[in-house]
Figure 1 (cartoon, rainbow, N blue to C red):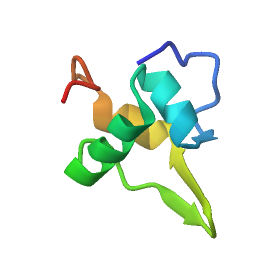
Figure 2: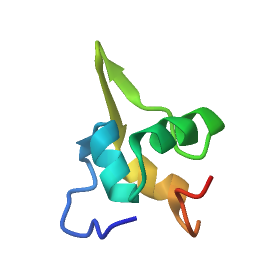
Figure 3: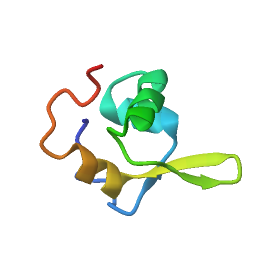
Length: 68
């Protein structure tokens, strides 16, 4: 995961931004969601967002978070 120290923990990210943070493809983000490796996103109508805090908690201690 890219450094996130300067980003407020209550931030939310879309799939493109999560892929950028995790340094993987957007399709890998969706696969990780389906596999339960990252939390389910929040759906606001057609907008799908992940909480940075929840992402950090779910990936804490996992190396190669985008490995398939």
